[in-house]
Image 1 (cartoon, rainbow, N blue to C red):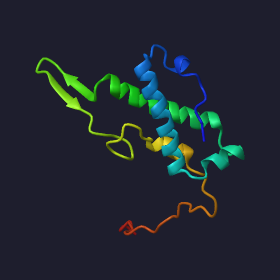
Image 2: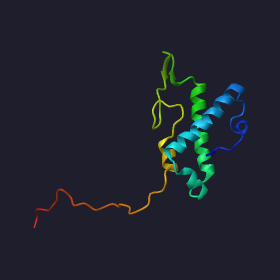
Image 3: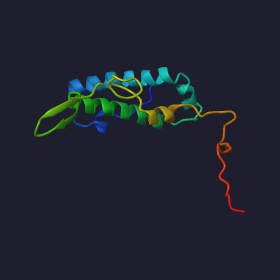
Length: 134
């Protein structure tokens, strides 16, 4: 299902033709990743249990992270004057992927839990403190 429906040039202005093709490919892959992780998501969107705009926003964030990493050539940090460069080896739940869901995005897209919820229980102390004075 197509979740991201905005115009690429409005969301990411200044993309050249090569970047536009790359982003279009990433969009299809990101939506495929989301559909694979949440097979019932399109039905939930149709039933208005989750907004298409919310899912589209998650796709936009995934592509934004991929574009930022691509612009930096995979460099995560840089230090001066010693000139130390650190490359990103992968992040997210699928470490090493260009496109990934953060834990917040995963929780946002996951279906609401139904059934009995377990609350907090008061546990007895393992020790008791008594005042020894009468």
